[in-house]
Image 1 (cartoon, rainbow, N blue to C red):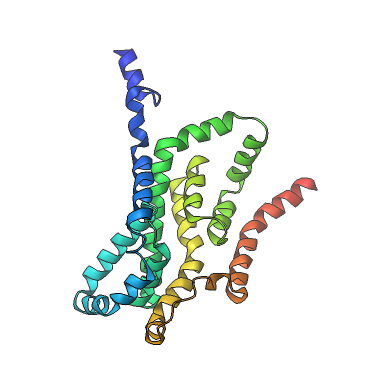
Image 2 (cartoon, rainbow, N blue to C red; image 1 turned 45 degrees about the vertical axis):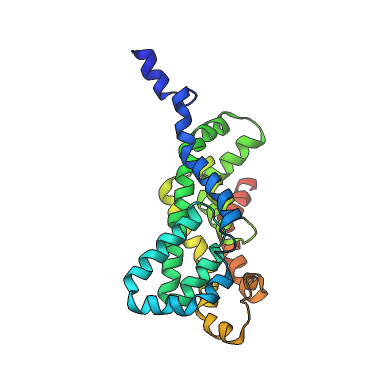
Length: 246
């Protein structure tokens, strides 16, 4: 009996493969979405259906919010194409506020789903192996552990870090769920404000027959403050290094 119970708990046993199902489902959904949903989750789709969306929102506001948030969560959780369009849609339908709140909450929930799937499937084992490793791998793990909040904020604030990657790394190094959720929400908030603001002005863009500038976040007057926040997030790490050398 003891051998059987041990086998059931062993992640390498035949039954242990079930722990990879959530992460595998995300991977399969991401591949299918890339092929079949790219044309649907697009700016053109939003432009073609804008009047119907506005009419539905005016007639069913609470239902519109619920459907929008659920759709946004699914887009992020399954890494489907169209996250930027979803953020613009939130601004277009609900304005800067509460649109930015709906966008940020939905993105955080979706990101947390990926985090939990990755941690359930691989995170605990990878974190244990990193702790047992020597050399560079161990130093990286210890560095992140000593400055988790700063590293998590920087990954979220700097647009160069892919969102999906920023969801996986914390799971693989053993970051706590509470800290992950808080830093994700606050870290993506600046970028969410920018794109929601753009979405709130889509009415004029539609009227001119133009497309929104998706690279606006890289404009100096917008990217500068975000990089400033990233620098502030790194400040505790710099201070620790200076004190350590002293």
